[in-house]
Structure formats: structure tokens, C-alpha cells
Image 1 (spheres, helix red, strand yellow):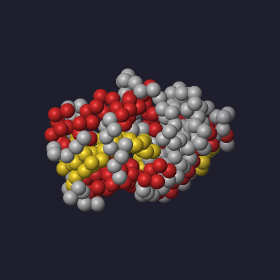
Image 2 (cartoon, rainbow, N blue to C red; image 1 turned 135 degrees about the vertical axis):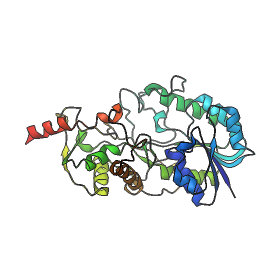
Image 3 (tube, rainbow, N blue to C red; image 1 turned 60 degrees about the vertical axis):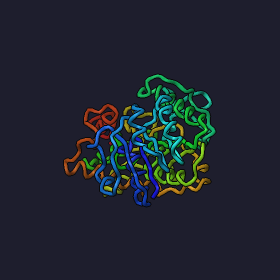
Image 4 (cartoon, rainbow, N blue to C red; image 1 turned 90 degrees about the vertical axis):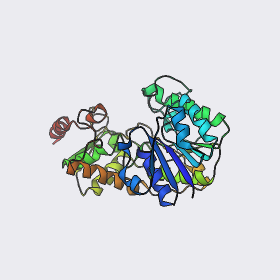
Length: 344
């Protein structure tokens, strides 16, 4: 029986990977600092929780034991993290390191966290230039992509069979920042209108955690030193995403598609972008990767998860807090209603 060790395996990506591997008959161990965060459904399937701090070399080595057929690192954010990963990867047949599309930079050096949004000339391939590796705070806007780039460099320079996976706007059950809440909450609040900036044309390619798990399953069978983009087979616009979520919840609303004359504080969503950000996944497909499904198919479980948490009151640790600055900017209903009233 094949064995997998998933570092940071209790989160969004880790639980999706664990679920897929367990369903295929693997033995799966997941690490974390808090056993209470172990997803019950993963434990019920047979996954074992191993207490280990990602920054503790001894605990990581103990978690690996004599080795693994597959090592997955969901919490590698810095070059220092990557250096701790290398001794483990030496005793794994195949290793997957989760990175991010945030490393990509356009011709002017703009990236997903820069003040000026990036403008890519078509779908982004793995050969696209990246931001310079850095070691500033990885939790900062400027530091996140730079640290991910530094971690990638350490892993790839090792020559070990480590596959760097670059997803975009990851979604699924267990997300710590469930972006779909922007439309789920509106539907549950029975809002009669949805306002969308730039007429809802913004595109930032989403990636289902289940599709990342499918790619990692392929990587387990085909070890190698490489970089692979991972994204859903479709790249829906903000308007299309709003329609998918409303339909899943059986809700309808009037669409108010805003143009450049509307206040820029209205109609914002997590998928806004003046230029499309789409990942080219042909390299992963050439390796044998086949996605589980498109956005509408794979997002359904997360929409149900969020809606159930809201309806049952079991929202602790699931739904964003009302004062969360990331989400609060999307729910100024009073300003929206005032704007719509002036137009009628």
C-alpha cells in the first residue's frame, strides 16, 4: 500500500488531496499543530493526524519516518521552509510543493499583489517571468509572491523529484478565505440585485482544490523536477460566477452591470481584473492530468458547505467575520440600494 505524507494537511488543499488518495487506497498521514482542525470526514476515511510544527525539523523528520511514496507540502511559504523540505524529499519517491500564480510578473514587473494589476499577453505559461525571489514578510502583499518564488528556487535547484504546482484563486470546502461567500451571502440575504463592476467581465482563473488533488495524483505516478500550472478547465468571468452560485442556491436577482461612470466602490468582487488572468495548463495535461470538473461542477460542494454553515449556525471557523476587512467591502448594501434607487 502506497503512503503519502501531507504537510499542512488539514487545510483546503490538504484535505482534498487526502480525500483523493484515500479513495484510491493510499495510506495517508497529515501534519498540523492542532488536532482539533483535523477534518472529521478525512479522519473517518482513515487518515492519521501527526502533530508537527512546519518549522520544526525534528518533528518533520519524525512525521516522515522511514519515507513516503508521495510527499505534499501545502505550507511552504519561504526559502527557509523549502530548505527544511529538502531532507524529507530525499526520502520520498515524488514530492509536490504548492506554490501560487502570485509569482508571475508581466512585462512591466506587475504581479497579482502589485498596485498596478498585471497585464499578460494571453494565457500564462510556466515559462512566464516571475517576481524576484525575496525574504521579506511572506504575509505582506509584496512579500507573498517573492517568498514563494524563493521557495520554488530552492526546491528546483536541488534536482530532487519535486514538482512545483502553481494554482490560482483556490476554492473548495475548508477554504480559510471562501471567496464564493461574496455571492452566497447575497443569495441567502435574498438580495434582489447584484451589482458588478466592469460589467462583470473580470476574469481571474479559479482552481478547485479537487483539481489540484487530481494533478498531485498524476505527479505521484510521474515523479520529476518541474513546474506545473493548475486551474479549472474553464475561466469564468465574475458575472458567470455570480450566475453559477445564484443558480446553485435557487436564487434569482437583477444584474446591474456597472460601467466606468459608476463609483468604483460598488460592484467589486474577488474576481475583478482589468485584464484577464488565465493559466495555461497544457503542460499538466501533457503529463496526464485530467481535471475533476469545471468551475460550476467543483464549486457546488463549497457553496453547500457555506450555505449550511449559515443556515444551521455552525459558522464558527467557517464563515468570514462581519468585520473582516477583506469581505466587508463587498457588502455595502445601503450604498448599492441608494445607487439603484437613483437610476430608477
